[in-house]
Length: 332
Image (cartoon, rainbow, N blue to C red):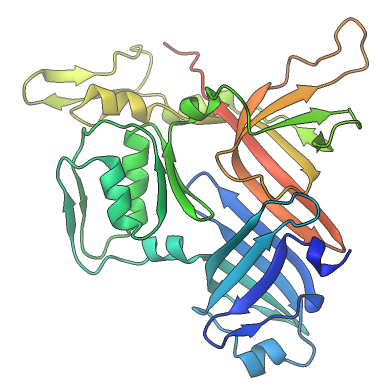
């Protein structure tokens, strides 16, 4: 496989303008998540002559520009992402780079001064904290006030806002997105359809596992949230008295949103596809050899990608996906 077949087409060291020779690339993994933990970029280079370490001066805090393109396999992917290096461990003659998207890195840097968002929409708040970035934000009501204090991480406040809106805030390469999982699941058409045990299809599931986590999630998030409202008095979500009581917001809408959670539904590996990103909706077809039941209906028919890892090593490129569905509570 030539270099033009890789998802990663170019890696440029922005402080010096040097472009890395991809012939020395041993392995890379690009991880995208439906939260503010990524995108992350991890790569290992063979550096026997210490060119990266000595000549280029690769170090923590440096910025890389990574060009993503899938020219021959899936024409249409052509993007550039800037990453900030967190660590550069050296093992023998190899150098590893662990980096996070520069946009996300900025949100994980303590705020120099306080910012107050009084009765501002989520779209407005996202625009202020993601300046100059394209936005794809759903429709959300203005309910709570948010305050970013000096010395706090902006990502912490944004994560709180997303939870209280029952949504997910994430960076989809060059666009910041804020959407409810249920809204993505309700799309009329999926972004892709993947098939298991059908080699005539382009999008194939090579191997998979189905997690089992219902009880763990219910134990973690289901509470009878309550709070004091200045006009309505004591309010609560109306959950069963079997649920533990927890004090929260003055808004019942916010309290109900806090109870929403994604449920891990499937974990599968496929041939690399650069179009697979966090927040992408997939339909899944689980073929069987049974004449009376050609489709395995015990596995999910539709999921949303919560995590995807694009991995290249030894001339092989695979994508591993973790799909989720909205948690359906058994306790009412």
